[in-house]
Length: 204
Image 1 (cartoon, rainbow, N blue to C red):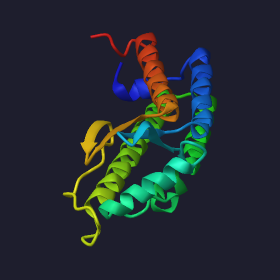
Image 2: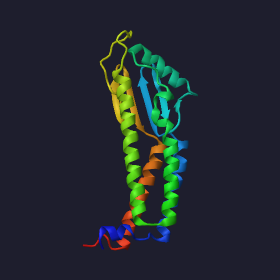
Image 3: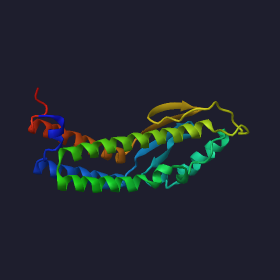
Image 4: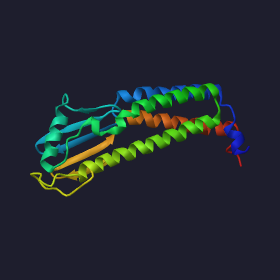
C-alpha cells in the first residue's frame, strides 16, 4: 500500500473512540501545572515553589512563594516574574481548545491522514511552546540590572533538571498538565501504529 493510499484509509471505530478519549487529556491539562520550579537554600529548607499553568502562575504557600522569589530576584537584578510576561499564556488555552475541536473533526471524518495532521500540528505547537519557555528563562537570567546589590554572572535558569545558582539549588520539571499532554500525543502515535498494522502499511 502506498503512503497516499494509507493516509486516505478510514480508521476503525475503536480508533475513533481512542481519539475522543485522548482529547479528554487536552481538557484536563489546563487544570494542572504544566511546569514546576522549586528552589532550595539554607534559609529556605522547605523550598520556594512556582507552578506554571496554561493560563497563570501560582506560587506555593498560598501564593507567598512567588512574592518571595521576586524579592530574591531583585537582589540579583532579575526583573519580577509576572504572568503578563509569559505571552504563551494568552494562546495556550485557546490552542488546546482548537486541538480538541480538531480531534472531534478527526473522529467524525476518521481518515488516517487527519490523525497524522493532528499529531504533527500538536508536535509543532509543543516544540514552539517549549522553545518560548526556554527563551523566557534565558531572558530572565541574562537581562540583569547592573546596579543590583548582588552581582552574579548571566545565567539561564534550568528548564529541565537541576542547577545551582548562587546559594540556591533550583529544580525544574514537567507538571501533571504536561504529562497529560504527552499522553495525548503518545496516544495519537499509538493509534497511527495500530492503524498502520491494520492496513498493512508496515509490511515490507
